[in-house]
Image 1 (spheres, rainbow, N blue to C red):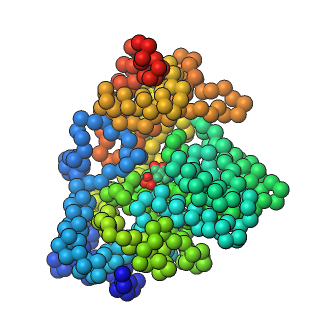
Image 2: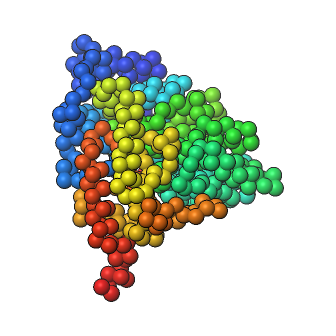
Image 3: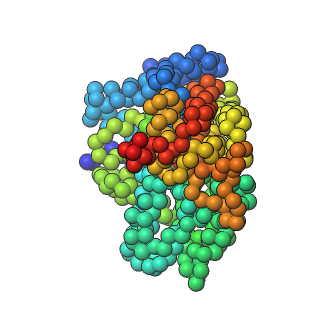
Length: 474
Ligand SMILES: Cc1ncc(COP(=O)(O)O)c(C=O)c1O
């Protein structure tokens, strides 16, 4: 498809500020909703914004799929209708301008140099594919030598680990894992493990072409000291650093320039109130590699730069990418905006985590300073979680029998030279819940989880009872 020229940055910035662009809510007269001062959102208004959530479920798992308030969903529906009303006009005169407006809003929120540094993609998995595909080509085209290393955390997200193997290991990379301790006591423990693994990666003079570092690991959830690890990578001559920050924006402060990585991605649909699916990928405009990155879905904009390539990957629904400004409007209805939300979520999740640990005779999997709005809480060891499958079955049971939604982690790893951490009854703690706190959560959500686990313990439940072989026998 021949495309209209992209709007220039000045027009985009004006659009992002709501000056000249009908964003679907205003009539073009007077200040946009973003500029209108609003009173702080009330508890009733928060409930109304999330009234579409299944009221029967205690959802203490914002982390997996995020949440989207009704006001942002309404804005999304408006864009969908605009597209369907006159698809050609929408594409030729609205879509690119709308995407630039969203990119400018992201650039402002994460400290990017300007809008040209930000691409919008579906999700962190797609952003990882973009970076890893480039690394794979570098092997295939002989820029990297067979056996050069790619470093990743042991706790890298499963899909990203698979991507690393599918793209770069297959192309010839040696993959080296950083074996992080869990439970983890301090950022220094993570930094020490990282240095050791980097030394292994560099053994025999091997080049380290890429380090993939999570900003907040998924399972177990731990905030990683990314700025320090990026600095170590620079000192040690690692070529490129990709921060997989799928969970970061809305949970921890994000300043991409300050962190200093080559590539940084975060989902906007997890903790930033956008609908699924939208994420950003940041690259510095002064880095020549930016022009060598390509979207894995090749379409008409191929070769016009990643932001443009990502803005047209075939006929599809782009509406999730068009409502970033409305998500920011929503955030700004809270005292302190996103910073206020983050701070309160952090305080609450630690309070609820401690309440659960106290009730179960266990402990938190990491100190508060290594948590954002999620925390790992040990479950009583007598539940006998002995595998990932056990953990998944217990999670399913909590959903079906107790209407509690919470991910469960099986900790197969022991800290080197240390015994497995034990609960107050002396049983080794092998299972952890990952609890989240988001603006819609209430104390009763966590009490439901607490009581469900206490009931299981009092009934002598063990995870083995859910195993298929045991079920057949009983
Ligand atoms: C660290 C990390 N990376 C990548 C992803 C993938 O995110 P998405 O499914 O939105 O692509 C997740 C999802 O939870 C994650 O936690």
